Image (cartoon, rainbow, N blue to C red):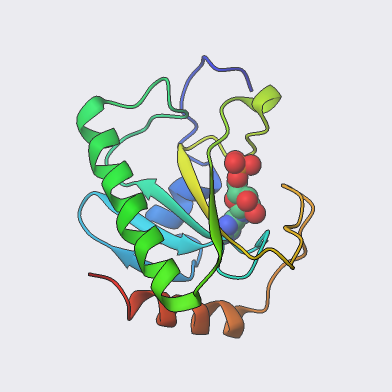
Length: 145
Ligand code: AMP
């Protein structure tokens, strides 16, 4: 999948947004959804997507939707920090297959970091336990401003 081309309405995040497959939601409003990555690279790995844009990558998103998305990333990251007390946060965002992207609906990764815990590689993390993800999502959601 190159940087250019048509949006696939059957990509996995589009299906999550339509409620066709489940996700562990942290929060949502009319514009964005924050949900737990099921293959977390560290404890508390959250994804944030636009609900209104069909941008596949950063190059395609409308400025207004990007403004709302980045504000949502900051709001979510602040809640992750309060809930999980990481020592750092890695924000990641991949564009195009060659850029490491695997799901072609633009998204930001929020990955809590601790100096003494190695972050798992992108695409190399095992699937998380659903109940543990639900518990983490609840802790993060409880700290939203
Ligand atoms: P990227 O490679 O940047 O496109 O990231 C896609 C992310 O989506 C990866 O971190 C996957 O672990 C994650 N992922 C894939 N399927 C699901 C799913 N059903 N629910 C939540 N996260 C998912």
